[in-house]
Image 1 (cartoon, rainbow, N blue to C red):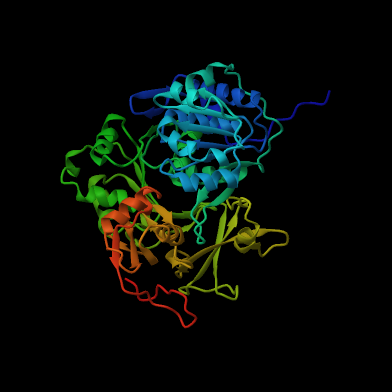
Image 2 (cartoon, rainbow, N blue to C red):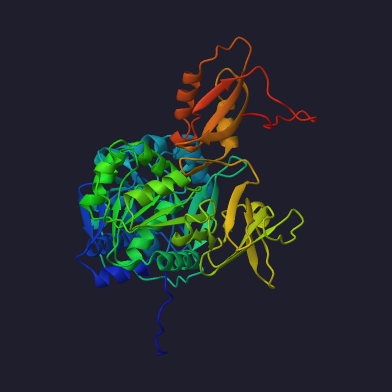
Amino acid sequence: MPAELSPTLLLHDHLHGSALAFPDKIALVCGVQRVTYGELEAGSNALANRWVAQGVQRGDRVFIYADNSVEAVTAFWACLKANAVASVINPLTKTEKLRYLLQDCTPKALVIDSARLPVLVACLAEAACLRCVVVSGKAQQAAVDSFSASSFTVDVWAEALSKRDSIRPPRRTCIDMDLATIIYTSGSTGQPKGVMLTHRNMLTACESICGLLALSQHDVILSVLPLAFNYGLYQMILTFRVGGRLVLERSFAFPVQTLKLIKQECVTGFPGVPTIFAVWADLQSLRDHDLSSIRFFTNTAANLPLKHIQMLQDLCPEAQIFSMYGLTECKRCTCLPPQDILRKPDSVGVAIPNTEMWLVDEYDKRLGANEIGQLVIRGSTVMRGYWRKPDETQRSLRPGPLPGELVFYTGDLCRMDDEGYLYFVGRMDDIIKSRGEKVAPKEVENTFMNLPGVKEVAVIGVPDQILGQAIKAFVVLETNALPDAKQLQLLCAAKLESFMVPKVIEFVASLPRTDTGKITKAGLT
């Protein structure tokens, strides 16, 4: 028999390693639930074994359609251990989008919170790909009974974990170039794009970020970011990589509760977005809370205003502030060293370790200092491509400077100063960033056009102190239709995630057009 070689390091090996080193240590705090590394390892192993027994194979996709929860975290690791590809679906996703995602990704397994079952029921015609569904949350047994005539098996959460042992499942010859996850992000066409990330992509990003933040087993990370958002997903992965503790909240809906948790759990790291820090700034009780345990803040999605940087420094004089920038397609691109946060507050920093970047003009010519051009990223964090979208993949991944390689053309306009610090200018398309989420105006417009009384619509982003950008819709009504902005917002809320619903609706007699008759957004404010 040939000698057995050490297996390739995969993403879920980080959880396994921490479980071996710290089996009785609390890994995850979610509400009143406190889960140890040993329990998380055993639970994810059992669910993975259940899925393997039900026919989930290497490369199959698994949807996790639930709020931030112990079940969602366990399911993510179980998916990887089953040699499958995890895709965490935004829990705010409504019927039309879930229908599209099921058709596009064809998952074989699904974990779903019982509160979201009506959305799945409305999509059963597109769910023929499913072979096994696990229901978490309340009223689980009723859900199982309601699917008795379906083509897929349905388990309640506890039973799914109890039907198999908790021994680590076999690796099925997976290697680090295999897909680990598909993260759906809004596309400029209005259709979500599935960003394909390999184990190698994510392992590389984790190594670089852990090094930058000096993460260790002693860190306690408080995340209010959704696991469906890559920034939120990585908080879990980074924390478990080093054997730290993750305090996972469902959202930032209760900011005062979040501030109380910082003291209660002795939080050392807080990842945020500008929206969160803007809410903090408006809290009169902010300085009543003890934040002295925090040693670092991270920020992404947009630059932090200088007043918010100063607020954080005033609250936590000893804490470091890491301003970061990146895209789902390549995780992190840059990081502004904390010592430069006041010297270059408008910058998003320099390239993170194992990443190279430059700017090009429309003719693909490299640009010099202080010239504005498209950002190009080269490195091991760059995605495999967009799931089942070869044309869009080819537009974004193009031949690099060295033979045989592909580099990522981000579509972001940036400039670089004389010292090599990057400054984000804007998107080459019109993607809106609101509440830390990317919103495709086309998707909002498509929804509006299906509403009664709407003749034409144009959607833009406008500056907003809290949201970063607020969604604004300019609506032309059909003849005799009565303008009712509140009613349109309610109709949109039934079809779109909350962060996509326009904050402002302005009724106009007509929209500006180009010479060819196309609607143009130039001049709309």
